[in-house]
Image (cartoon, rainbow, N blue to C red):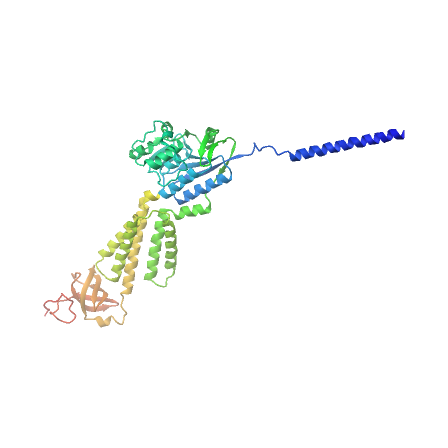
Length: 471
């Protein structure tokens, strides 16, 4: 009986041990088994928007967005383009970023009625995928940006058959970009010569300027799914269905750069800076005009370093300021100051080339701000000259009876050179600049003068003005 119980106990212990060993083996196997592939992990697409002028802020925005696409291992980076171009350096930088990107880029002329032209055309040519909405329009391009470094320029035999050059005046970069993505290298040159260039989406697709027409970004992602593209990192195959969209908005630094590089604001800050500093020099001790002028000048020069400044504009502004200030130090005919103000206004207007800088501002804004600044500048210098030449009240009575020469006179007021200095004068009668005058009375700090005819050689006679004396 005892022997039977002992056998049962041993049998029960053996079964429990086997079960425990089997459990440990299964646990170890599960621990050593790698997790299943994340085939359901969300794929990402980075979306960026480029609107208006393509300046340094747009170039920085594209660089930052493509860097995000690389970090997120995005399937595609989409550039929504609605621009007519911009600065050559900025367009070149954006094109270079697209060419060097390991993540494929799709340049999409959208929203629905987008107008793409100028340097922005080359964003479509540089991108592996170029798309348009059905009613978007491609305008006249500018010459292709020079200096773009291509990782591998295709041979001439790789270009699409029948892609004629069409008299392209800039074949090097244009044809290299066209051959790199299999586009028509002849259309940009033909469009530049066409005065009414405008290419609809259907025609652009037929002429191989773009690769597809899409209604929106979702339609674009559906059409490019499964396509095999060449990038700087090698060939990739797109998987753009059921993707997570990352909308990359400009950060505060990019927004600040866009404001600083605005041509209208840069010109306005420069005008405020010049007038503020001159007002401080004319009225020492005010402090506020000098402080505002210094800050405005600093901000203006920060913005101008991103813009294409016309040297002729700077020269005209400098000449204008010189003429206006010269009139303040020497009361010559007022037409000199007016000419200086006109030169200053003209220089301010042509200081920044709107086409080269990609400015969307209206010319009348530049004309209005330049004219107002010129008038203010002229007023400051004339007021400063009037203050500087005002004589102390104690010295004025001593000039009674003195003679001199009228150097400027209009509407009963002017300036006369008396005893080597210039004095504000008033008079009656038909007085002309260059005429000899005598101080007949004193009214405050203004000398009242009358025409004079002195005997030849009489003391106080202006040189070259001697004549027979009056009885």
